[in-house]
Length: 533
View 1: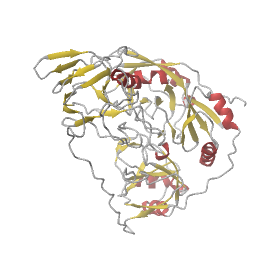
View 2 (view 1 turned 120 degrees about the vertical axis):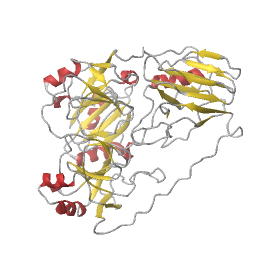
View 3 (view 1 turned 60 degrees about the vertical axis):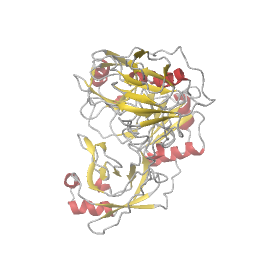
View 4 (view 1 turned 180 degrees about the horizontal axis):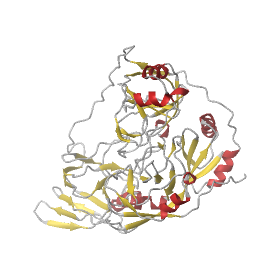
């Protein structure tokens, strides 16, 4: 085993193969180590997040080093058949890479029985193993920005099906009409770890795919009988998103935590109005958001300091401050101007918004398409009726840091690893020795960066997919890094040179386009040494 640092509360255990990974995962589930929060199994690694107040990385490594990895997990009796139209745009390339004909590629793929080893990358995306070794092909050198939902693809020793449209670098050999991820199912993911899978060629054996059941949506408009107060959204130039502190415990289905990009600002907004710290808020980007309130309410705005103006029923215009409770009367219209600094603001209302959690959280995950729908103009938001659980409003909240402006340089602390040793000395030096521009292609999934010097790797070796943490600085073949934010994929196949320390993640979530980032390593990369019990 190797024990590799990810950040100050996450460890990556590298093992010999997938069997050892699954054996360690099963061992830790059967006999857990107190302090482990979450685990993400992958091809040859197990990523483990832990509580720093209960464990150190060295103690955790010591607990793991003595585990028996000889046990093998029996496959499930569940067999899932996936109908496929073998019409993928990379099918001919796969044939050329393997030295097989197109027909032979299809035959070998359909005659294989696969097993779902683990889920990751996106909700419902199962990494399938056990296929014909002749079909092992590398990822594309340049990933596509959009792969359609239902694409059947190959990469290395894995086969998989993209549950929804997303970026990706796998070789596409076909498409399926089967729905891989459906929140009306229990569980939503069609592929579960251990399931056996076979692919059926629709050209030879037509299969009828039953339409997914349509969930009845609640379209009833709120009324005075159902809610004390409503907010009618008048303008939302960029859709606002419901966010809370995140969605945990769903990694087995390939669902990452998501949650507010500036958790401190969200918690401060809730404290200002007297809500519990994790109550869902609206995450608003670039200002311009406007709404009319139907009754008396207390709101707060934190994060990026949008100017707040209130037009009352008498036609008077009133200004309000961020990080302070703001009282509203029936008919008041609130408009947020453009913030001069930062990127995201958080709107809380006393009592909280009445929003239905999805998989245990009200966070909207933009990559996974999990959570409440984005909030646009015309939406009517219901406010929960006040209860005795509310606290007094807080008058002492303040921003945790100065919000950056476009053109400014922001310094972020970085924990080196887990794959720093995949880069040359020059590549390591260029991570901290230059400024990286934040490009307009940045979003909640990650900040796409542009630097004068690409981060040089030692070679072009393929990295088996492994778990990635929020803050990971992943480096694709271009050498231009991507800084993963809260909606990042659960697993990735490009090396992570370092990870932004947790204490700077909120700051990273507030960096606007055209600002610059300087990475400041706070550790030197080295394997974690297990501490003896």
